[in-house]
Length: 256
Ligand code: ADP
Image 1 (cartoon, protein in one colour):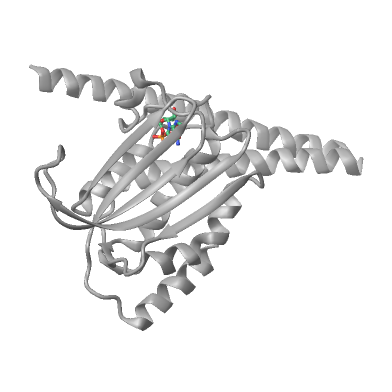
Image 2 (image 1 turned 60 degrees about the vertical axis):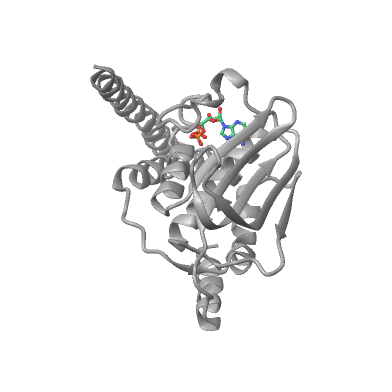
């Protein structure tokens, strides 16, 4: 009975989401169409620039919205390969900085002799970017985004019953934190506290799904006023071939 209740709740959530997304998307398209009409009617350079920038913002938000939805619905099978995290992150630096604001410091702390991780590099890129964007939103007055990784041998006696060799990847911010009463809901799909058009509530559920599908685990710790930390355990991979590390670097650079 509990399962069918959950199912019903999920279906309701999906119905709400579809309606919500259609609504958001419609609003964004209205901005673009309205902009085209206005552009046809004015020759004023300053006004045209303002309209164009509004249209660009709306289009970018629409793009982000559909990209997140696609990533969520596709649930693509992962193509795992051994990844050298320090090179992956080094290659992503510009991309991450671009997603943040100037008042946020990026601190990357990689343990020496860090093991490679075995997962899908494209998905890992998206997940890190997702977490960076959440951190940015949580630090309206600036702060520090720390991305840290260490080797972790787990005995299986931990609360998530994971045993084996993992890399513990932590993405931490010095932001507003999460109130305890909603902390255990943030991994749920469609759960968001952000205003319409800004949040889909799919980011963290995607992060969780990614960690689980990789054979690892994800958890979140947060204290209001102190900040939030998302911790991923990703399985250890074989040593990365040198040319492989190079490809990862140039691949992330291309994306940035
Ligand atoms: P979205 O960012 O689209 O709202 P997420 O699934 O990524 O969806 O996050 C769900 C909710 O969890 C957010 O709306 C926010 O309330 C909270 N949250 C996520 N990351 C953080 C963070 N780093 N700091 C504070 N709150 C966060």
